[in-house]
Length: 232
Image (cartoon, rainbow, N blue to C red; front, side, top):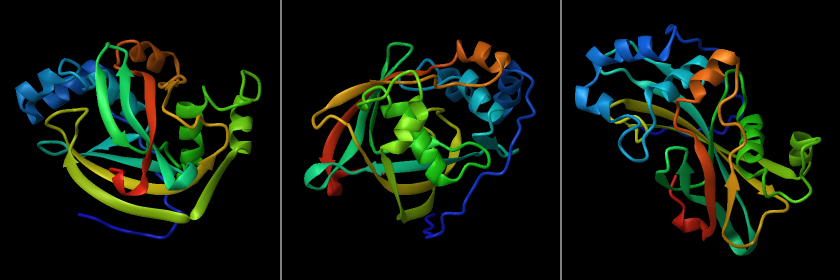
């Protein structure tokens, strides 16, 4: 299913999970998913684990339908960062905290927070994933400096919905609301480069404690490609 929109007013409503812990979430999922699928989470290379999903629910980035199997709905902003000579920035792969490598082949993407509009999510995603290489950034005033050198084209906004199985959580169907925007970012290298993730999981003490057991992204690897070779 695919939808297209030219509105930029889409935002997420606040969502809070009803699971007190990752274990309670796991107990809820077990009768609703094939046992071999759930057992592969965090074990099969490139997948995430139940701690990741609990954090997504805790931080309002994801909702789960009470169905069998449950459907995970997530709003994602895709940022097509333009380079020279008609090229666009693509994340080729990621290095994960468990030592595995996950192939990507898509533009910069970021799950949206509750009540966050696509443009704000795009700027935040650029800060979190590209901030370590942008010229002139530092520990002081890091976020505001990134905003100063990021330009988002609001007229480029498109929205569509995709329904497909999750690569991160095998066996869990996904409904992805994809918000696409074009952007330019000053200070990026002209060739291939890698960046370090900046605090992927934020939140209170409980969230941070759970985050230690989640699979996180340590490095992002980027390359410039022609527009017609981008997979979204």
